Length: 149
Image (cartoon, rainbow, N blue to C red):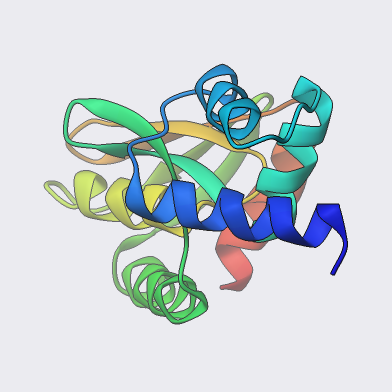
């Protein structure tokens, strides 16, 4: 067994059992366990094990998303888009979604739950959702992804 495999198993265990709020914190825990690694290695390990930073109450922490959870989140988004989204407009770096009154927060919540690549966050009003997009991904790609779920 390689040191990399052992370290990644430890990363998985730590992310699953501890509240890991930063890569620096995880790096310290790995160091205490005998794995002296760089921040870049920690970042690669988190990506490899499928860890994402997500809100858990008042704390943003790393967690490993269950593939079944990801499928359910995408399915729920597809239903919300089909039922509520009336239009999708690209206004880079923002995607603007129009919904019937009172439905914007439902759609925004479903988008947030998918951890869709390129989505930095959402802001929901009564009938409008602003999806803020990472410019390196591009608003047109995120808009197409939302429309295609």
